[in-house]
Length: 444
Image (cartoon, rainbow, N blue to C red; front, side, top):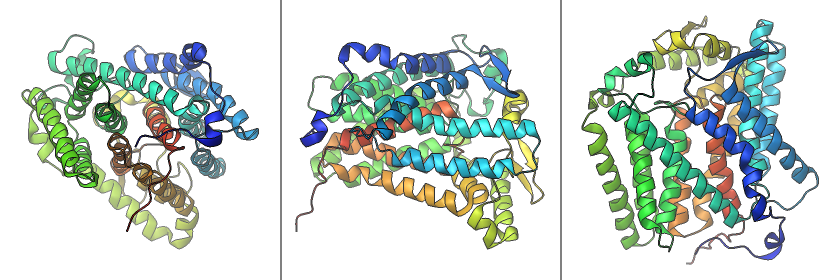
């Protein structure tokens, strides 16, 4: 049974359909700019002593625009299906991080830069909440349809450039990722080591459309195929692990045997078809190597910090940016990072210049407050599949749940505002759609 509206929720304030295009215009402008303008063409300027990319700045400004709407809805307590608690919790955590940053011994330039990174952290969910808080579930579904179609077209473009070298990348860009036997799928919006965070929920929504009783199943298959091809073309071991977990989770959680077989067969066929296209040119040896000395050193250094600093440091954290002060290095030395200059010496050992793990970030720099926030977020999202027994809903919600494993593979939430913004849109849209759905009761 699909989510339907009932009771007071059906009388919630709605944005008139004639104004939807204008209402979403700031979001789409920021997304188009951040997705289609090559990194070498993106303007970078220094504002208030902080080097900023216009692609990130436009996302931040978009978040301010929608954030005002969300704040009004929140303060006036208007009916909204978008939960405020995740945004309030993350804002509180970032405020704590800002307090520790102010008292840190970092240079003023680094304090300003990392402070801006905290603002971007809050901007991602704030944009999503402000954009969606006035939408009904049906309007939210229509928005997700537009978003996923755009991502599928974008993935088609990125994948075509990787497979056929159609001339969209610079000479330096073509030489990156040579260990995969082809150019790894990437673009201005996401890279090979980060794209799976937003591609997994997008794949889930495309399958939601497939299982819906409509005449658009062929289009849903095409969209899913484009997204899965891009996911496999990332050349990322994490992406393969997430896709495998997703297939297994769906097969296990479907209640009817027929649906289990159909789901597993559909995902299997789409994955095999995409794999034939991608791995016909790629070198799969890279995917068979799980050793990563730099990541191992980062984990060992983090463990040394936790052991050396003791329980008090774990309760409060060492302070935001006290170990990984990455923003200015990213902005000013990106070319060097791309060719391997990506390690630092912390005093506790060698580490990558940022944690490459959301879990490590909260454990080391935010301590117990960060861990409580992360666990509560994971638990809240993990409950989404239980909100409806509908097959399409489970295909979508389980994709979001599986995407949470990404937090162990790279630094999300606190870095990469444009990727985080898309992920938060899927998360908060899921809460919006399911808000009016009664939780199914178990029968004995």
